[in-house]
Image (cartoon, rainbow, N blue to C red; front, top):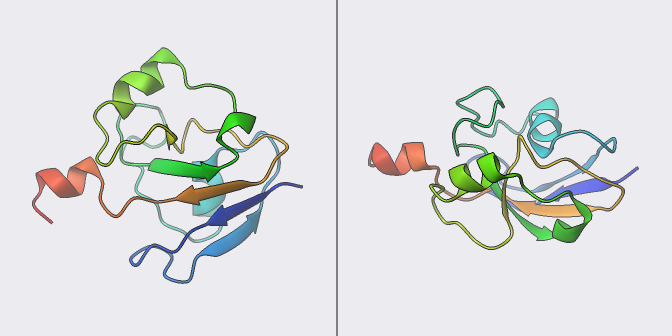
Length: 112
């Protein structure tokens, strides 16, 4: 079973985490099921950017983002080449290392 390694995030997961994940599960669902409360304003329907993550390892093991996800990613705060919306990033057979950015576009627009 693949592992999802979550790098430390001072607000959501200060110590980081290692989670066993079933292949086919979304990164967002795995985080939420393991008490890492990543923001997901659109309820995982690929209609916002609040669940943005950066896949530091294992990026190529996932299916490519579709056009809709790419369009939303263009609006994400802190976008990087390995960025994905965690609600659309489906775990494959390889381990993943993800970083949850410090801010979401919601936080930036609300001046947090």
